[in-house]
Amino acid sequence: MLRDAGLTVCRGFHGGLRMITIKEIAKIVGLSPSTVSIVLSGKAEKRGISPQTVEKIKRTAAEHGYVPNTPAIRLRLASNVTTYRIVIFWTADFRESVMLRFIKEIERRILDEKAMDFEVLLKVYKNDHLREAMTEELIRSCHGAIICNASAEDMAFVEDSHFSRPVVLYNRYSRKYPGVTLDDRRIGALPAQVFGAHGCRKPSIITSPSTFSGMDLRWSAYEQTCTDCGMEPPVKIVCGAGISDGYQATRELMEVHPDTDGVFYSSDELAMGGLRYFYEAGVPIPGRVKLIALGYNSLKNTELSIPALSVIDIPIERAADRCLTILTKLMRYEKVDPSENEFISSEYIPRESCPGV
Image 1 (cartoon, rainbow, N blue to C red):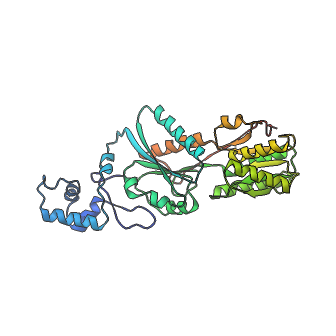
Image 2: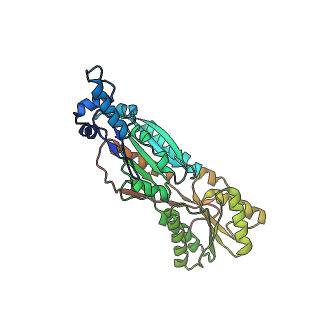
Image 3: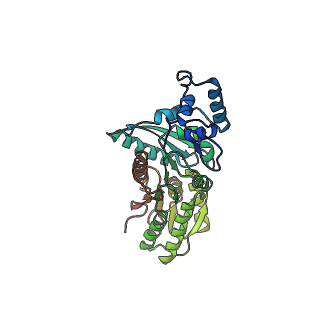
């Protein structure tokens, strides 16, 4: 929340942003908050404040890390705020297709809004470097932020921080900040249940390396459900994230385990490579092997593959919509439980590569 004419400064912090207020500076220099506010807003000469006082206030502010915060002044609006500026932090290591779907849904919501306007800034950052991306200047220049797909190291930074603006998390769980999280256990269990219903006995999983705890939950749920459904423990192959990686991993899988009858891919890109391998090898899909993938790309894209790819739909649009809804409530100072986390459930979309049961 912005106070005292919207001017804030930053002083020493550990792991997060500690915003010093005008009142705190006033206490340090032994002057009134109004005098400090006048000086830091550049109106000292007009108000007849002595050069000695101006120098004392500015020196103290500089010693505590003061940075002129013009955007913050603009952000201090009355209760009838109609324009909100939000920042979306997105890790550069995560799939571009997911980012595009997420941003497109935010754009759709903004265009549909009647009562208020939004300005959106997309801040792409390197994995494990959220701390550097979330500078105090950037945070102070916005009304709120959505942090997406943070790594374990970045989440440790988030949990240890006290941000000066509302924050909502996408696809990460926090006891401190509200968020919208995918139901990772269901994502892992669904394909195993479908394979089991089709009578598969020798399942497998082809996945890119785990980058957050949710992926581990998915794979453990898949493995456990395979066992619960009477199948053998699934063979697991870890590879890169591209189509060619899916092709090579599928070839490796079938050369070593030719009796595999169900393959779960951690992305539709990997599955596209698998479909190419099975086509070249003359393996009938779904007659000989059944395929299911996580649907990160548009459902229309996977529907046009040959055969059409069965997917576990990742409801990115629904998650983006809920993130913006929660953040809007926070920016309007409506009551939201800081530890509120919504779980978005995925659904199985049966197609030719593994029909419905």
